[in-house]
Amino acid sequence: MEKLVIHGGNRLSGEVEISGAKNAAVAIIPATLLAQDICRIENIPNISDVSCMVRILSQMGAQIRYINKHTIEINTKTVNSYIVPHEMTKQLRASYYLIGALLGRYSRAKVALPGGCNFGVRPIDLHIKGFELLGARATVENAMINASADRLTGSHIYMDKVSVGATINIMLAAVKARGLTIIDNAAKEPHIVDLANFLNSMGADVRGAGTDVIKIHGVNELHGCTYNIIPDQIEAGTYMVAAAATGGDVLIKNVIPKHLESITAKLIECGAQVTEYDDSVRVQSEGRFRRINLKTMPHPGFPTDMQPQMSVLLSVAEGTSLVSEGVWDNRFKYVDQLIRMGADVRVDGTIAVFQGVSELTGAPVKADDLRAGAAMIIAGLIARGVTEIEDIIYIDRGYEDYVEKLRNLGADIYRMEVRDEVKTENAG
Ligand code: EPZ
Image (cartoon, protein in one colour):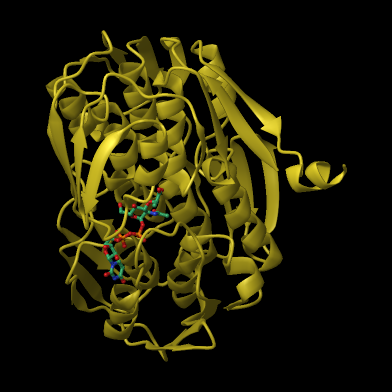
């Protein structure tokens, strides 16, 4: 097991290249099941969530060929089962996309309930409602979701709540359903649009992705394709905040600036400088910030997956900042770790009040989940002294080569093997 060691205080400067979008990749990989053909996917991020999803498809019988670190060929002709057992799905929350994809392929799916980040309740009632409206019978027994239909039929589905996962799962099940499916109050995240573009490259007919209403005309067959995944909006935002928080000057390359608009706006509001170019953004800062209020919302609002990272910057802004988590019911667990580093913050349900302090101080902390881990890295980069972060396996799930990328920007950060200290203490 490893931990991170960070000596804080270095300003980040230079250039960083953003990888492919994790949340697009973990939807597009299962979507390859919808065609009994070969798909070539480019700009795939080299992160453990992706390798985990690829492993699941391989265990289901798909033939996988890595052309290079970021390009993969998936041949699903040889997939021969609609059952995905617990030992496969427990490693990855996004494994529930296999339900929609297997329903689309076989009109049948039996998939173990997933694992994944733990910040509050993560229900799947909207997924199941969507499948049932498409004509499937869906039950949950022995922690397995069992869904089947004689023939999936298009339907008008109103989403009670904006849900990225449910929108994606319904799209996967609907592309080969008979007739027209309308998803009302659909999620509009960039990875929803990327999945729709991928499905259309396979011969599907998906319109309106990125708006509140997605219309899908079912087709009989889909075919393989070659597709290039969009850059990761959240990885890019994380480096933007890290650059600002350290008072640095960083060019973040291979991004779609439009996907970063809400992050750019908030960084400018609290005093950083952000310059947009065609496929990059430059972030400059003196390292001093005005307080702001922040509310996370579904896209195009400020992304919930950027809330922990931005909160670290606000913990050292001048004045009192209010952070309201509008998507998850318990996404402030990381605050306990931040308080160990000297932050002055109070949490009440989905609201956190940050009283800006002059500096954070290094401490031994842990990553509670993927984005909390990213936030702790930013805290370590700006803290006075040494910060050690444990449980970094969470961070490895969603950030490709982050230690190398940060070191190239001037950060003093490295991975260290965690010895089993209990044994050495007992060694006498
Ligand atoms: C996706 O999770 C992302 N994960 C999350 O990113 C992200 O935080 C979230 O979308 C919101 O953007 C992936 O894409 C793999 P939701 P998802 O369904 O799909 C409620 C990361 O760090 N809800 O949009 O699970 C739910 O409780 C991860 O990359 C229901 O009530 O999120 C939440 O309050 C962490 N019933 C809200 O909707 C349902 O059936 C939004 O959840 C489904 C969701």
